[in-house]
Amino acid sequence: MEFVDRKKEFARLQKALQRENPQFIAVYGRRRIGKSTLIKRVMDFSRGDIYFLADRTSEPSQRQLFSATVDMSIEGFSMASYPTWESLLVSLNRALDHRITVCLDEFPYLVKSCPALPSILQKLLDEKKLKFDLIICGSSQQMMQGFILDNKEPLYGRADEIMKMQPIGPSFVCQALHCDAEQAVREYAVWGGIPRYWVLRENYDSLHDAIENLLLTSEGTLYEEPSKLLYDEMRDTVQASSILSFIGNGANKLSEIASRAEKQATDITPQLSRLKELGFIKKEIPFGESEKKSKRGLYHISDPLLRFHYRYVLPYRSLIELGNSHAVLSVLEKTENDYTSQVWEELCRNHISTHGFDNVVYQAASRWWGSYYDEGKEQYIPAELDVVAESFDGKHLFLGECKWQNGNQLIDAKEELERLQTIAGGLPFAKDHTVHYALFLRESPKHPDVAKIFYPSDVLS
Image (tube, rainbow, N blue to C red; front, side, top):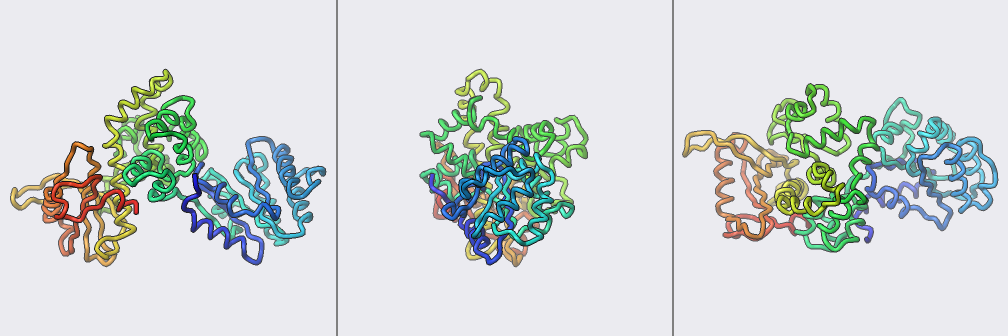
């Protein structure tokens, strides 16, 4: 698969490494997000740059492996014995006659085997005598943040650049997997924006074929991926996995999650907060309400692969272990449109937030649920709105409806627009606003000319 996106990250790293003095750079983000690939593309191995991928072996083993890696750039370097990391790094520095870049990938593994390593690096950095740029990289977001952002840690305040890698945007799925926008939405609903998942997906002829071989078989490369993601970040993976399982199977309120966990809400709140910080879940609040004050918040799994795992893999694990993946695929086929529609709604909200509408720039779009007042019926009627956003100047309000209809379902755009207009007429927060309407549809509807319509190709543009 070709290297897509990451232009900003690449330029940022490249610019840092071109500065006059050697730099100390920290790069972190969840596993398989493309940290190592990006770093290796920025490094120049023809001039002797050193990339070292740590493992879980002992400290002496790590030092020997590192010196052997250095030997590929500085012949004979590994013939000497280095009893400490300090002696090893000082010797490397002395041996250099020109500036290079050294990357210590999976840095948390090195620290586990040698807890004094951050203090050693602190000393070397503070002396300002290093001849090489130093990049530390790791998949454990919690540990990496601790090393560089905790004011009690030796490396706090030393980094010249701190880069947290984020998933790649959905618009690049088309380019990476060579598919149209509609198929890209389906793909993104499973793999999200993690490039390594895209590489694995590319090995199969169809989405369902990839799902069956990567996720719905005990030998699949991504079958245990959620457990590994959680293990990277926390000690108590059992409770975290249980909470994700409850959320993935429809327990979205705090009270519902606590009830299924047979715990008090206060007991699981810290774990929910941690999962939210890591980007695994999100708390959704109805438009117009304060996150701190609202009691109607709903928790959802935000990471697509985790969402898929806790919806289709974990509940059917017994079938999968017996080799009956076809039964699980049958369940997926019956519910796939409903599953994909959740992701489609999120993509549509993101589109309005980033692109605006009718030359109006909007704040972050969200969903709304509650009741509106119907003057004709003289009563409050429950309703939901898929996309709601207010302009930054407070003068405009955007309302949108999202439909990921199947091939046999023909949406009537006129009816959907009239429904939005009726709801808007009974919403207090819509008053004193110029209201804009749009539909987000998978396929062309009846009466397409009555409303502004966004299709997958528009949303992923």
